[in-house]
Length: 314
Image 1: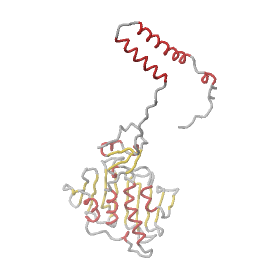
Image 2 (image 1 turned 90 degrees about the vertical axis):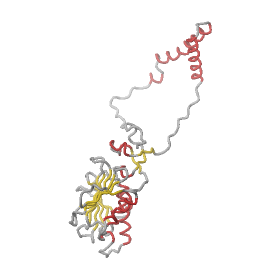
Image 3 (image 1 turned 30 degrees about the vertical axis):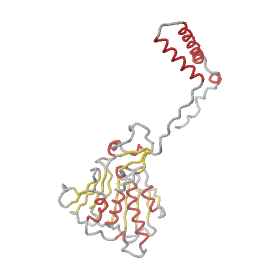
Image 4 (image 1 turned 120 degrees about the vertical axis):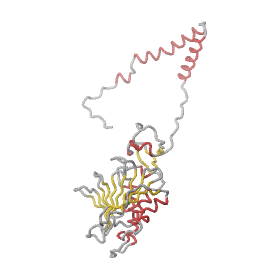
């Protein structure tokens, strides 16, 4: 259930979103790149890949495709010039905090590896048991869908808004066999992470663990697709500061007294007292009429703005 205010309100208001897997992307890859911020960065002027972050020996490559549907492409190889052993892709709706689960595990694997070891953990073979790759999901209460097609395994979240599909029917090394997803189908609502057959099981599990992290993530309201309003819980960032009422001025006190007296006079027969009240109201209103009919000197003497002056940008 959503606690957010109507969507038409401030689109740039910062809110905490949960569950995290439905938060979508905030338009940057900062969270996903944070674990490998110390690795070499390559900014590319040509081609769809805009930023490539690699391990120092270039065996691990993390590509950011800022204008593509497949926003992230991550690969690992036995050495810098070998073909990728496995590939993981994440689409433009996937929260970068989920990618951070994978990049954190890759950074740890690389730090523990030997530069001359072609059997580093990040290129190790996957487990023979599909359950090892998705154990964080089942431990979090996600359950197996009994209606999955023969040769496949599907596990879904308790809210039915996220899941994983494992396809055991495919046998090619580069076949896409594991798909993590979240959100209803649609261009701006369905997050997807796809792993090829030889992806190490512990790396898929690290991604899945990030996916079920209960901590909310921060977004601006406009980052969320309108269709997600009823599927997430939003909590505004920062307390609401109550407005402190200002002390009334002497004029406010007089106007309030006159208004109350006029109301009393309207309820009772006119008398000499009532006539004095009406006179007081006339005296109070007259200065206001004079002010509205005679512009203030400052407004009369203020020079007109030049019609050719540049407008201030908003």
